[in-house]
Image 1 (cartoon, rainbow, N blue to C red):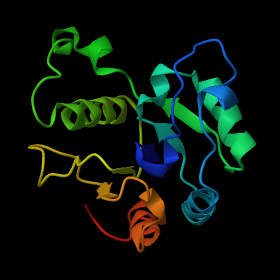
Image 2 (image 1 turned 60 degrees about the vertical axis):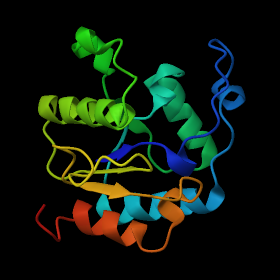
Image 3 (image 1 turned 90 degrees about the horizontal axis):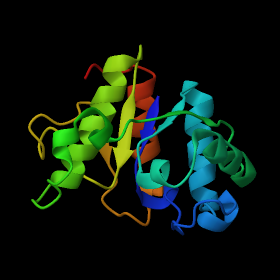
Length: 168
């Protein structure tokens, strides 16, 4: 499973519900699509969307959009929204690291409710154990948000974790 966050995989969102998805989101970067497809082929991973896209499109709409962009697999799920399973979190978006903490909790909640053999979360938000206590053990930071998985070596790190070649 790849829990997908932001970076070049997250097109610009035009918040106009009801409009076609291809109008709501910009096109994916072609090089990023090639990298993602290679990862999917070499690992047989599935995609779970953890980004804010889940606020602007349904899983089916995102699947159609991924296919239209040339991605070989449709997302299988969206992580839950923190406010849906922790209503007390609703007004807490004011301290440093909250967005990272919220995304991390959403991913952890999804993982706790699903049987997943091996997983990795990739994002330009730092959800590592070094930044958050606790953070995500199988996390890869893409520090250049406009480069995402196109950054040198990121794809190999993802493939290594997903093929269970290291123990996290």
